[in-house]
Image (cartoon, rainbow, N blue to C red; front, side):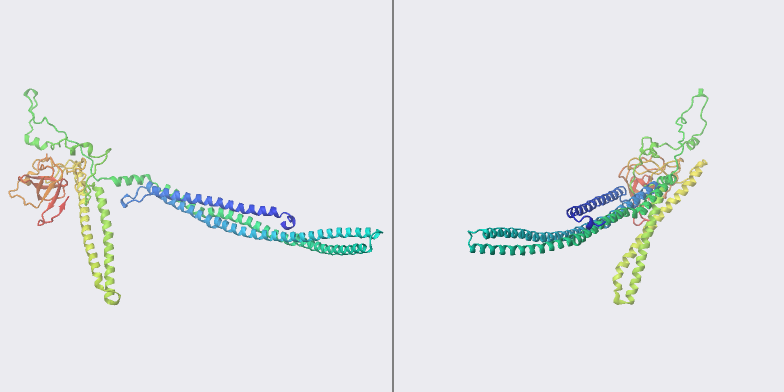
Length: 566
């Protein structure tokens, strides 16, 4: 149905309707703008949420539990989901909002052009009507004047008293007015005919053409709105597959949670490698008492046998190292020990893992240096063969630096491998001794520390609980009272190979051990053999063993294998 034929007289209403169409486009564009602002804000809030709960972590703090890894996978998928919300906002910005704003401007310009043409056509028709109306009024006025002149002429012509000149004058005036009326009539007829023609053209050609253009413009507006509605929906539909994958990733992350695997990781993370504490021996303090004759029970056990069968002297219960409630740290917080380069402050199993991790890192760094050295050597060869490409001597400082770094890394790698082999060897030997202890075998002679005592220093095979920052000491000496005596019975005194400073006080209650005070300086006469005890001599000449972890040792430069222990 055409607007030109049906709405030929509704120019003002069509003007209002097309203006309403523009207002509707702008209103819908505003709706889309607010919608994409919501999407952008939503995406930004999601990204901030992910960033808040997925902070930067050091390599040692990387999560290993499946529940944590799955949670971070969920966060990653949520971050991707936020990215898809941003894609939706971008699609709406360019393909919906931007398109609507461009079309709105074009629509306004086209509407203005068509309405201007309509107004021009209307103004032309109004001008023709005014000309016709003026000619009509002139014809009417001239006709009345001619009628009046005729009446005057007839009156004077019939009047016997009128002179001939008055009659002739009235007759001439009558003829003049009649002629003017005829001319006005002809002009009016021409103007009327012209107006009728222009009016027909206006309502049958100009207005239908203009209204048809307005109709086409309005229909295109409707079609454009439909297209933008579809684009609005397509912006959401395009991201549905990726959003579905994000949700599937979250579901997969949920399925990846493995409680048993997490329990195994807990064991691997906190396993110390120490053996559980053994039974406390019964200490019979009445064995040295003599029974009265009336009791009829006099001990016949020789004193020497009683001394051999007697258990080792019990540590002072007041000493913080002998408190059994601190041995396992089962329900309390484990005290922190000073962080050492060889990780000797950690339990054996944890120390072994950290050393192995350190060895792997050093191996990678060494391989990088080796690759860099090879690359520099190749470049040097190229420069030597083609001097115009560069000076080979300029590469020598970098090659020397790389070689120096390689030597340092090799030294560090060798040192860590030595510590690792020491830990693995002690763990193996402790397992053998534990098996021997389970069969009630005695500890071999020598300075081997007995089982059942615990220390947090994983460079030893025992565990003795510690208090505050005091490092643990090795296990108590063997129950055999002559174990250390044999070593001190040498005729020739041992040479001094270094000195040490006591970091903590040590009571030295067991035979063969040496009492030392805090900050006391001692001479080193025998290095630690791997059992956690160092043989030292006081300035007074008294000799004995002290816990290696309790002292800061400095070896003499001219002594064999000089090295500093902390």
